[in-house]
Image 1 (cartoon, rainbow, N blue to C red):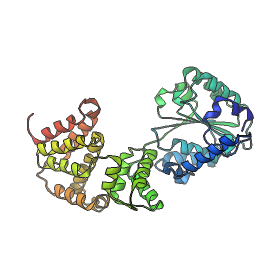
Image 2: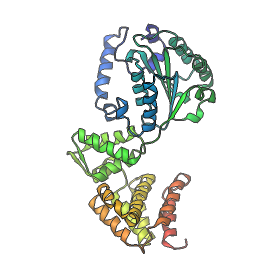
Image 3: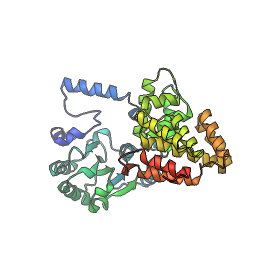
Image 4: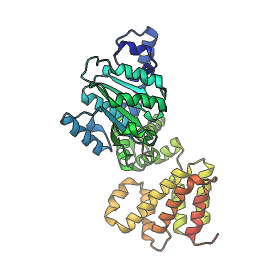
Length: 382
């Protein structure tokens, strides 16, 4: 590590310091030790991908990086873009190791905390010094879109003429905020959100390693609540298993621990659609509101089950797989509705509720889109 860096603001953002070349006083050593111990218990850190083989849902990116590395083609700057909690920083750390940078030559900087031009100027001075013990120094700059305009201009100078021993890995959740001059000088990789199936399998695997058994519907609900984020999904799983009284977790436990809308209310809502009984559906919605349930999550759960109904009706060969994902009671209900072809659960109903989902953010009263959809699907004129 560069000795001078310890006295600069940039040092405050270097998260992973396993070995330092300067002396920390006893107090800081103790705090750092306690911090490390406590963080080891957090699932998203414990199960963070440590090599390319462990990276989930980003196969095209992993393949491209591995291929380039095998040919010795290392870019001077990479840009990882995508939503939060999907593995950008993890892949950046793996890439740094694969390039051959040691922990002492890998620096992580939080751009959200260091937005000014002076911070980047200090960084520009630091990159000129040679690596401590590796061929390359790697700088991982997270949330790079938070830099100020002047800071971007300062960073651009280094990106235009980088030292041969330096590799930048920039990460952002908002690539559209980055100057084109910066983006054009990076090798860009767009990370995608993991599918619910990938999250579900991850939940089941981690729970098993932690000694817990989850019902398939429990894992499905946790994956859905994770909303396309590995970190959020693992955080929800952590909350559930920490609060569980035993080693077997039911969907009711997940609902209770997370505040997710009850599956019985989702089923009542779907039955109301099928039987064209808007009043019953509105009662279910009102109950969700009474329990402070998230209407967006409620509608997601509804859409998922309605899709299963259509698949059971028109793709019979998928029945076995669907059965494995649902509780016995849920499967029996959806199978019954699928066989009731005269009911109102059809592709039109699914489209209507998809529209309601899209409109949720525009309504002052969150439940109103669902109530209007119920009236329309019942054939009544409001």
